[in-house]
Image (cartoon, rainbow, N blue to C red; front, side):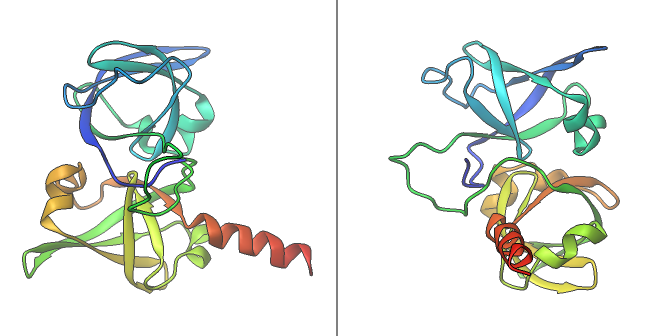
Length: 198
């Protein structure tokens, strides 16, 4: 589990593709890997990955075709900046919201503008996820825990304060860029409970 509070921005160091899948390595001189072990979970742009190799300033992870297909990993290239968060520890507070790292889909940036010192985004969500997005509810965009300002049809609006712009890769986003989104896990469980009860 994660909180959606990004610990640092790293970058893609290597990308090795094969018939079995793709192995990425992600580098960061700012993230402390000294307490990380092979098998630990680390979220990259909101996608929960399992570390298969860890160095002083990098880690490697296998990425399956399923993950490639349902996330923005299909378009990432060497040098791209990515949001990194190590998994939540039981003795750690939750400043964001509960995030599983299981990305629900890919959304598209359709507007970006500044307002009173902050950055506003309008993001078009896939049709099958709109029902889980609520005004003032939580959503995860590229691994960042955010609050939905409003939603109109399939387009939701978020406000990014300067600290978050500077501490994540959201400030690098442009019109028509794709982002990973994870909807509120509680909304998904509520739907499952209600549907099971008929």
